Length: 120
Image (cartoon, rainbow, N blue to C red):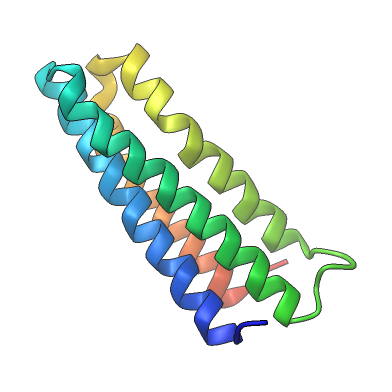
């Protein structure tokens, strides 16, 4: 089994990769780029979300929280679902890509807040 620090790096790195993929998807939606420009961004987004999920549950397991997850972990899982759905929103509503551009950092800051302060 890996250390807590390893899982933390995987978790944070996963979100960096996922946000990079989302930025690419929003750029592609805003500029009406062809499918070849969207594919790498989708791959990065999906891979990043997978890494974030594995790292997050790895940290929870190392902290002994798997028998009952606290509320802040449930909130972070909800944010993970929202971030996973954003490519669908960007594809179906490209006119809102500018608003999503500003919403994505908010979701990242909210996830960081939940992870650092563990409010509930």
